[in-house]
Each structure stands twice: as C-alpha cells, then as structure tokens.
Length: 267
Image (cartoon, rainbow, N blue to C red; front, side, top):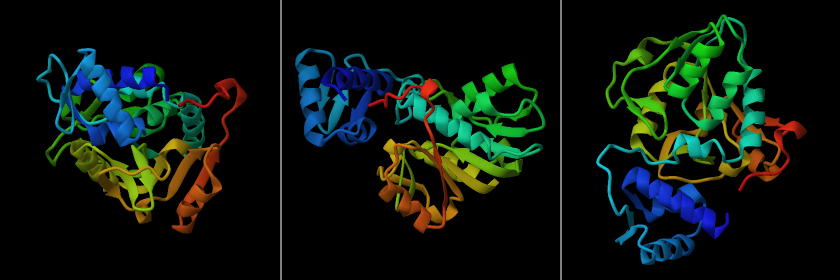
C-alpha cells in the first residue's frame, strides 16, 4: 500500500474512532510497527492528528461510540473483485427453503446479488444487507435488534435475548477480520460477542475470506477451526495456506475471479 493511501486511511480511522492504537492500525492496514509509527509522526507534524502514547488521537475527538475496524464503505473497496467471486460461490451453497444467517460485512454484502428472490428465511445484523434484500427480493428478513453502528453499518447488542435467540438456521455465512490456525479472528469485543451468539444458532458455519485474510492474526478468537464447515476464498490463495484448513477437515472452495470482475488485485 502506498504511503499516501496509508495516510488517508489512518486519518479516516482516527476521525471515526477518535482514538486508535498502534496495534489496531498495524492489524487493519497490514503494515509494520515501524511504518505506522513513521506515518503517525508525519501526520502529527502536519497537524492532522495528535500523537499519543501507543497510538493516535483526532484533533477534534468525537464522543459517539465506535467499533474497532475499517468502516463498511471503505472496506467495500478492498479486494472488490475477489469478494464478488467469493460471494457468488458462497450463494451456490444455498438451497430453496433454507433458513440462513448472513453476518455483517463487505464480503457477505456481495451475496445479496446472487441470492434466490424468494423462499428464504434470512437473519442478518447488517443494515445494508437487510435494506438491499427488502428492495430486491421477497425473502423473509429478520433483524436481531440492538444499537446501529454507522461506520460498520451493523446492528449489535451487548445483551442476550435478542431476536437471534429464537432463530434456527441451517447455515451461517460470515466474513472475518482474519483466519488462521487458531480460528476466526476479530478485533472488536462487541463484534466477537455478536458473532459467537450467531454461531450458536446455525448448524453449518461458512466463512468467506479473501486470500489476504488467510493466516491473518488478531486479538480475539471468535471460534476454532473445528466449528467451521466450509471456507470460501479466492484463487489468489496460496496452496500452503489452504492446506491448513483442509487438514482441519474444512471443505475449501476456491472461487475464480472472472475477467469481467477485474483481474487487478487490490492492495
């Protein structure tokens, strides 16, 4: 990733979260500690953010609650061709009459285009997914209830007893910040807690992760590899990376990126 692009993303994340740590920036931007430290120092010298111990702070901090992670609209632009290929392949796993859960995220959002127009019961905590499904299909849509987080465009609740507690799904489709030998990873505790609740409501867990997320580490494990039935990734994934998941008994589906989706791989 070019320095100018990193600086733009750092300023965007600092503005959204008010305060963000070095560790979070390293994870979210897939850069080294030294690189992020140089970026923060440069932006602080330009007066665009305030350098603090262990991270950075916005010049004019907000007071609204924020989640750790890349904002949804920003994430849509990362590896877009790969995400679309993954979404198409994942949608083929759905059968008529299925009851499914679709977790929030830019990769799962791509599934909407490929879903059957009727005969599905769908629970989602994604506001954009729900809105698009209402617009383009006659499937039954259920929202879990909770607080709407604008940046991730996701509905989350810290409490048990929301609508998901009474929903039974044959399949859960979920994205992730990363996946490795330890399992599915996230950075925000509220997102991790919500994902854990949804896992309990589904028979089969299908993880949708582009090649950049394989082997990626974070601070929180949502579930171990033994809970995952299927991993859907793109054809940029290395054979050695895929063997990790096949050895764990996971069915691996490699989705080809079609020419019309763009052959240029995003940074």
